[in-house]
Length: 361
Image (cartoon, rainbow, N blue to C red; front, side, top):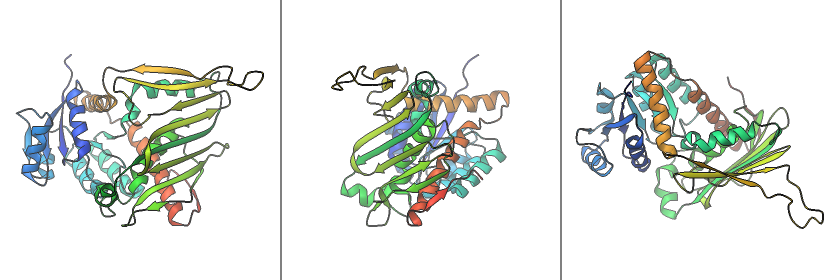
C-alpha cells in the first residue's frame, strides 16, 4: 500500500520553521503544502527560501492556512503567548497539531488546547525533537536494565547557550508579552523532559526552584534551575540558561550504572549520536585510575531526529485518516507532564523558593 502523504501547513515564518520545513521535506510521508504569515510578501520569501514546491499555497494570514481544506496538519512555531488561540483554532478546523515547545504559558491553557484536540479528533505532538532519535530508545534500554543500571538514584540535566545582548533584549524568547517563560520555557523545557524521561515519566512529589535566577531588563528569566524529589527518594536537578556556554548534558546515576550524554538536545552529528555507560565502576588497587572506562555506545540514523519526529507524527495522522484510529495519547500526556513540572518550578520561583507539590489533576 502506498504511504499516505500528510500535507503540512506552517503558521508563521519563525527561524525554527526553516528547520522544520526541511524536516517535512526529508520525511517520506509528509509534504510542504502551505505557509501563512501576517505578511504575504514574507510568506512568499519564506516559501522560496525553504524548498516549498511550486504548487505550494502561500497565504497572507494564519486563518487562510487553517481554512484550506487540503491541509491535513499544521506546524505552529508561533510565540508561546499565541499558542492557545491558534492551536485551539487549528484543532477546531480539524487540523492535526505539531506545536512548538513550551506548549503553553501554563497547564490551564494547555488543557484547553488538549480539550480542543480531543473534541475534534486531532493528533497532538510537541516539537521536542530528541525524543524521536533512535539513541533515545537505546538509552531507555540501559535505564530499564536492572542488571546493568539497577535502581535510578539521581538525574542532572543542563541546557545552556550564550546569547548576545541583542538576543537578550530583542529575541521573542526575551520578551514578556511573547514568551514570558524565557529560558525556563525554552532550554528548561528540554531539561525537565530529560529528567522525566530518565524516571520513565513518573511525576516528582515536589519541586523547588534554586537560588540565583537571573532576569533580563524586561523581567524575563535568562538563567534558572530547580531540584526535584520523588516519594521513593530519587532526586534530580537542572540548570538552564541563555548566559552560559553551549551545554546539553544528562547524567543519570543508578545503583549499578551511570548514563551520560553530552548532546541530548541536538546531536553533534545528524547521522550519528553517542552516549556512555559506566557499569559497576570502581578504582584500581592504588586508586590511581579506574578499572574500567565507561563504554561509548554509537547509534546511527538514516534520517535526522527532526525528520523522524515529522515521520512519526505523520504516521499517526495517516492512521487516523486511513483507518479511523483514535489519536495517540502518549504525546499529549508527556507534554502535559512536562508543563506541570515547569509550572511548579515557576510557582516556586514566584513564591520565594517555596517547595511546590506536583499533582496531575
